Image (cartoon, rainbow, N blue to C red; front, side):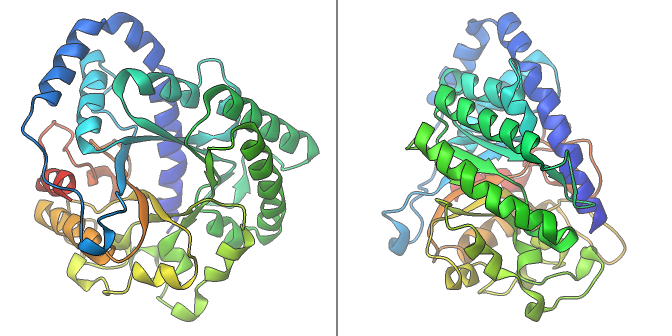
Length: 353
């Protein structure tokens, strides 16, 4: 669906702009308010157990949200980090690969704020536009050298725990297979170099799950065809520490109850690596005629997702937005909080899962 892919580019730009304001925000915010709110969060009633089923009791799933505050206002940024800590342990930044080398770029700021706000950053770079399959810049020798050097320097300086290269790369294979093939080879080089610079960093690329399953129907505008699945692309990236996916089943199914019981466990057939969901969401408002939704359906999806994934080794799960963001439907109502700051029922379901 073109809207879906265009949204990713817009979202990455918005998140980059948000992150670049953080240094100024931190300088003027002062520590008093932040400490007070963090203390309030620390003294809040204990959250429900997150252990999950007995089969997964030994494997704690890390949870988090993307960098998605209510607004650019100082207090809203502080509030975001307080609530992000309640939502889990992770905050993700995703954007243009070139930003790795920026002095005040989003990824650097997200890394530097991690100790202040007690979260684990997930840094994911992008190098193409999903809507067209067009590269942000030619993947020639000069660009690859700059990308590689920036990744190595960032890994050495910040030692990120999770470092991703490429978002929904199976869409690049669909749109520009030759460029995809070139990236596969380049990813191998980058992964090796980053692991040498920071051995404990987990390196990965990201696939779009619905597309990988051949689910092109619904709001994608095509038809669902499991025979068009592209699971074999996972094997093109042997140097990944986790198998990472984005997943928006609400673009294909009208109700969470319509999602097949093996929708997520099917992944185990194609990889034995720990599984990560770097973007996950369900809209809380109607999308189009015949595609209704509600706060309760969003809550139902949160519960359904964790039920359907109880049998797989989930390393981390990221809900796409903490707060609703100003973007296109259906992504504009995927926040766990509405744009006016009201918690949706899915918020309690999320922290209880």
